[in-house]
Amino acid sequence: MTMKVPILYEDNHLLFVEKPVNMPVQEDRSGDKDLLTFLKEDLKIRHQKPGNVYLGLVHRLDRPVGGVMVFAKTSKAASRLSDSIRRGTMEKHYLAVVRGKPPKPNDRLEDYLVKDRRNNEVSVADPGRDKARKAVLEYETEGTAKNASLVSIQLHTGRPHQIRVQFASRGCPLYGDQKYGSSVNKPGQQIALWSQTLAVEHPTKKEEVKVHSNPPEEHPWNLW
Image (cartoon, rainbow, N blue to C red; front, side):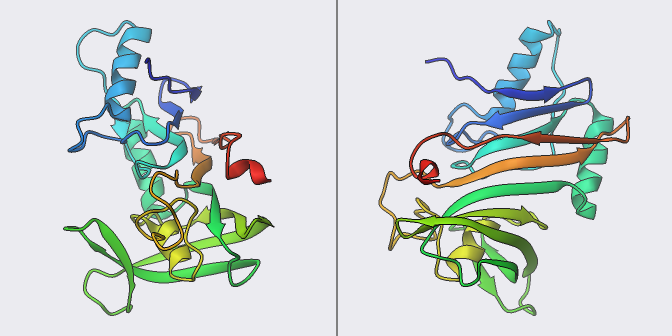
């Protein structure tokens, strides 16, 4: 089976793609084909480039998550994209299906998160705890059906597992999330989290590039 990765936008500096679900962004212990390697090989073939192809990884999505990602095709673009992430000016919107209903129809969630690297788990912690990092998002509930809710999320910080942990800590884990919602999700269910929109300032043109991707027409997304 040949893997296909849809290209959503491309120019000399930027490459936006739709990351397939369950594909690691970069090489990991699984040894499965990763997105960064795949795209480098694809660029080499499509643009008939000799030698190594430069492609900068500036942000990540968890392996089970699909949707828009941006890669830098030049070191200048990588530097400027990384700087925009540090300054919080890269606009990131997600869609998620959560179990039940969020406590409020829309809200701003602020927590401090700590990562247990050994178990690859993140938890909410007291602000003063060592290595606790602030996590902020805003959400709006778009609809509710069959004891699940569709929420649109603007992510202000990009902490590991942030969306999953912040919603789980409020009693509404993401649909299909085995790690943070094992009491309500069954093994084998696909996590319902999708990177829907990314907006960045172009590294040389200084104009906004905004790219969208919609989740697949399948359960639970097709409840709405």
